[in-house]
Image 1 (cartoon, rainbow over the protein chains, first blue to last red):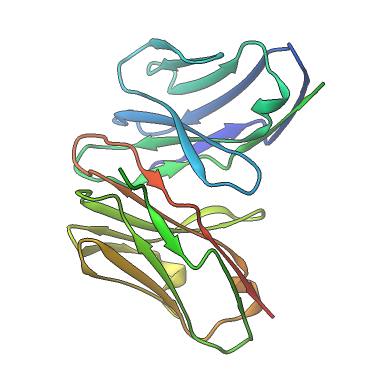
Image 2: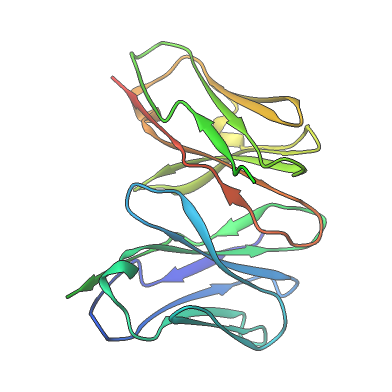
Length: 113
Length: 114
């Protein structure tokens, strides 16, 4: 079955620095890819969904890059601020006949003032 | 629109008790998921329903965990009997299902088993 490896498990940066979280997956037939954010004590919130081949998506203060050739998904927070401190999870959907996602183990990001 | 709701938000149980957690998915969603989240194990899938039919029942959890979906707008997760190692946050999520739709998560139930 699909396996998703997320790195790093913990990341600490200074305010204004960039932070990059990367996921690699094994199944080349994977179709959809997601990033979720979980603030302390809260549930998971969707940050972004991507599905095309090599693609860059920009959100509020972050960029998501998907490289299907390398089977790699990354989340880049361009200028982190303390409000970005949270756990981040990538998730992969293998095919559209199932709604089941395969999650990475998460990255705990700490942004220090 | 109401999101995924879960009750109770916190539950404290004695070892050996039976507890029932409840979830209401987003109206119109076809898929419903139960997860357990701990710091050590991360997110673990307990059960997956599509249109009320059980699609997957997490193998390691079959023993004392039973999820049911009696109608499209309500699901329960029963843990019987509870053990201290069941202490975790239990998350319910729902999605439209087909076509690569994202999952929407509820606020979770924090279970503590003494």
